[in-house]
Image (cartoon, rainbow, N blue to C red):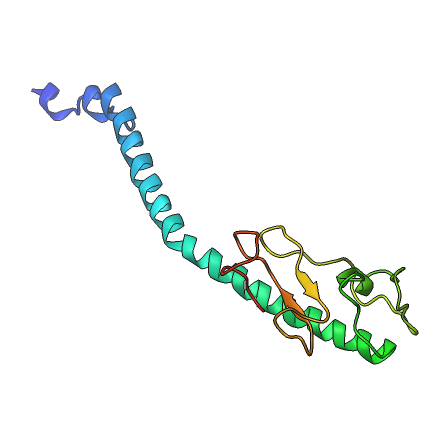
Length: 147
C-alpha cells in the first residue's frame, strides 16, 4: 500500500505539450497587437496634418518678426528678388541694406519641403507683403496656408 501514499514522479513534471505556448497562440497575440497599433496610427493620421498647419502658422509669425527687424535696421523690407534669403546672407541685388545683420540661420522651408512664398509688394496685399506656404499640393491655389 505504500505505492499509493508516495506521489508519482510523473505527476510533478509537466508534459512537453503543456510546457509553453503554441505557435497559434503566439500568432493570435501578435495579430491582436498589430490590429490595435494599426487603429492607433489611423486615428492619429488627421492630427499630423493639423500639426503641420500649426507649424506653418508659427513659422510665418517668426519670419514676419524677422522681416520687421530687417525693416527697422534697413528702413525697408527685402524685395521679392532678394527674398527671404536676405535674412540669412547680405543681398547682392539693389537696394542694398544699410545695416545688414544675419537674422536667421537658414532659409526656412514648410513641412512639405517647399520654400515659403515671399512677395514684396504683395499680390494679395499690395500695400504690404505676401508670405505663405503652398501647402500639401505644392502649387498656387486653394491649399495655400497663411496668405
